[in-house]
Structures are given as structure tokens and as C-alpha cells.
Length: 222
View 1: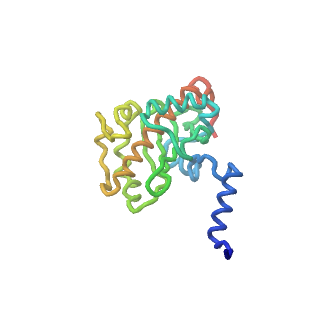
View 2: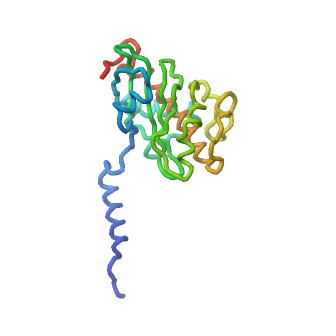
View 3: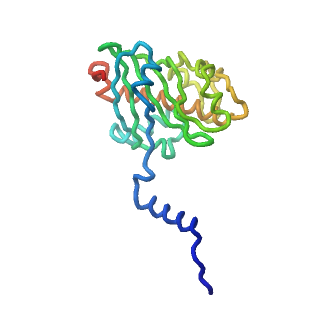
């Protein structure tokens, strides 16, 4: 039998596969940070005078137990690179002078064309003050990043999203009333609502479990 040369792209694919199997960091969990925190905090939270960024991981706060609690409330499994227990999350604690006034927190959510970065600006009661999609790909991404779509999330809380089922896309209350600006991209719309509920659940758990974020202790402003 004649042995030919291995095509270049086949050899490259094999090399990448071997590297991926042998070196974990190349395929490690994916976090979600603001592109330019100093600029973005001022834009997203008018009236703020400083912030501190606190890095959190489920793995260090209870691991699989915390993941199971979030899954139960989300009513869906956490899966993929964006949702492993070692994903680093950044909570931006916002201040006006030395007074804590709110939080900004983002998550990566799987979309049809890659990750969707969903940030929520929250007051101290974990109520949405502003909704912001930092990154999204696809033909209809502009419609989902439009201010008119974002306005529909203002005032909503975890209690509102607890009435919404992310798998069936059904529920009661205010969340089912959110209008999809791109009916042709119904799947991405569902992903965005799932990511928002997931984001609120993580914030709720982090604020409950983290000593750094405790209302009694807090953190110093940048």
C-alpha cells in the first residue's frame, strides 16, 4: 500500500487536538469582564464615584453544591465552557463616595453564533437598573443590543424571572411580556432570557455567600 503525506490541515487539526488534551489552560473556563471598567462603570452607573472588582468562583464557594442550587432555581443544567464551577466571575461593587450603591455583573451565555455577554446593572435590592449586551454575534445582534430592547428589563428582579421557565419559554408575570425585537432569531432571544435569569441567580448566591460582598463588611472603592 502506498503511503501518502498527511494533508497540512489534517496534521494541524491533529496537533491542536493533542495540545488541547494535554494542556488544560488552552480550553479553560471563560470569564466575563467589562471591556474598559473605568469607562464602562461611569457610563452604566451614572453618579458613581468609584468601584471595586471582586473575583468569585463557584468552586471556592461550595463547588458542586452551589452549582446544584443554581441549577434547581434555573430549572436547567449548567454546561459548557461558560458554566463550569471554575469559571471566574467579576462582581463590580459600585460606590458613591464611600457609600455602596449597587453592582454590575456579567455572564457568558451560549448563543447561536458564539457567546453572548450579558451585563446587569443592579441596585442594592438586586433590581435591574440597566441591561447591557457587551458582545453578541449574528445578523440580528444589533436589534438585541438596541436601547429599546434593553429598557424592557429595567425594574425586573430575580423574583420576576423565577416565574419564567427557561426551557419551555413560558411563565407568568412580567418576563413573558418582554418583546422579541427579532422574531427570526427566536433561539437567541431565549438564550438571552436564560442568561439574564442565570446572571440574577449568580448575583443572589454571591451576595449571600461572599464575605467580601457582605453588606456589613463590603469592599473599599477604587
